[in-house]
Length: 96
Length: 493
Image (cartoon, rainbow over all chains, first blue to last red):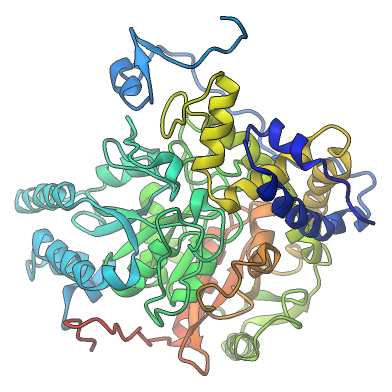
């Protein structure tokens, strides 16, 4: 069964601005990989719950204590662009 | 011993304790070895000469004052470049993080510093630990010390090659689908993936959070345990960290395999396994039997689909984890008219092909309409595997198999066919899916002189049994071959 992949849609969801040639290559490769991965669909798993954590631990809470945070200037120093204590990004909304 | 760089951690610790040499002399021997081998092998992305010399000096002072920290004090070790190190470049092998200097240490790194270890530098890896050869590194591949035309395995290939070459006495890696054990196998060193949760993931740049686990690569089983002990234990900063005390394995090292029930995994053999690997595995199973272990063949049918489940779950988790590389807080940024434009261009430019492929794969597997058929189903396969293992571990104490179906392959052999590269992880992935501990021990060489690894797996938190069997395997195999480093100036005993 060939697997249907809208690769341009997937790339957009993943915020990857790929060109048409790249999309074509990844489309073909994903098809091969997913065909192999689809083997999971042949495993009888009725009655089994999905496993998200191998040791089945419940959530590990820690005491809610005030502790020192990372230094703001040090963190902002790693940013591509920062000003007045903030990260700077291009406009997120049209017309802004 | 002709060169301090060839010492085990245990022997080097003894040498410093009895004053035969200092931490500084040991470090200089390791740095000299690195200076001779790096052009060929490219184990490191960053060597921290100044930081390491400072740490070695502090270690000497502690020893002089009679207050050494423990078995790692003054030991030169290497750390994979996906561990955050405060102020020291951390790239994850990705151009998207070139030049990034984290403002904090990973918990494992902080514990190493407290233990007095000397961190030589940061080792090469497949980009974001995705790969099995280091060929996916954004800074060029590492090479195998046993044959520089071959890969060291991956993704912790730089760590494995550094230990094999003597440019570190021991190293740390991360193992998501075999990224410690497979390169250890291909480089002839010991590689150990602990039970999921025993080593904090805080500060390990996340790839697939429900699989990622930090562990050691070392010259011996004893050294691997020492490195594990230094970083194991609960950390409140990792919500998936195991809350109890780490199991104590050291008393088990000398107990031998007599009376231990061992299961040889039927599914990890046959087509695709090189004859030399199959023969070496059979030989070790025989000598374990001769020592008095009770060896039986066991079948775990879901092992056959573990790889498929892994290559859905791991990319799905990766696609979410790698969303943080968006050109805003750290790393690369390409200009864009809108924030979405900037992010798309930055990510397309900064991520290499394998990372891009896995993000696309994971995004697809999680997307509307396909979630149940792929991701949900894979998570149920994982439950089935865990149930099968629980049943089998009622009958046997440990499982054994090859660590990799083949010995080291040539550079470029699998880069054009992603699926063929994925298949190299077939022996190691079940332990990640189920969270159980597993270790690779070098046991033999093939007809080309390349090392072969043997894998031991134990139930979750079964490190005492794992190390008992691993130490027996190491002793029975008597593996003593070393790579002949072609580099001028490195004399081997």
